[in-house]
Length: 308
Image 1 (tube, rainbow, N blue to C red):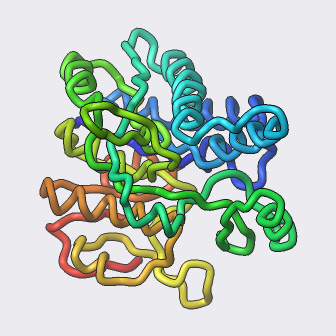
Image 2 (cartoon, rainbow, N blue to C red; image 1 turned 90 degrees about the vertical axis):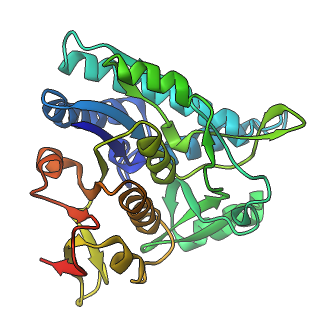
């Protein structure tokens, strides 16, 4: 099969970990070892998040704000594509010897009037206590929202409309190249009067990977995260794991804004637009996700909601 695996930024730099090169390399090595087991049997396209990483670069940029204007988020997003893409390509090459691997800088067109511009909800950067978030809000004017028991900075996350490098990616994939693309949801750009320019935003990587999967005729979309399944009432005594779901039935359920809702929306859109299957589950179960024996399967062939 041709499989697109979307890796969460938190799978590459885990929640609460110090954001340094050693930790990221170690996590990427673990991720690539798991991914390579799928890659030995199937053709792979890899997308990845960048929430923790772009947040770190934004913090570093702010440290020089007294003397230098901070770099905009489109440039920071491009930096993370290079950084994470390099590490993934290197480690996948170590695991899949002889495989041709290419990391492609990926621009994604968005609407500068997207509603998210005025109502940001994309989490970036590390987690903070409520008091830390309040202090940073006062100091920098940043917007924060609750992420579990902590708080994280949020920025605009417009809907991806078109991937600029689609034809280049299709040429590579059709030649059997393992492609790393759409990193961090792609670099957000807009077009006016025939000219392209960056936008201060961070696109959700799951929405971008859904679009990429459709454009590249993918057989299976896997969104790999740090939980085993989609849950109803996650973190509560009434929590229930979903084994499989019809996309219409899943979209009818309520999921709070944040990390899981975009994943569900992306998988449902892929299943509805292609008639194929998407799955959400743990990176540790990646082989079982690929063969359909783990995670939450989302398909039009499923009736209603099937719970574990």
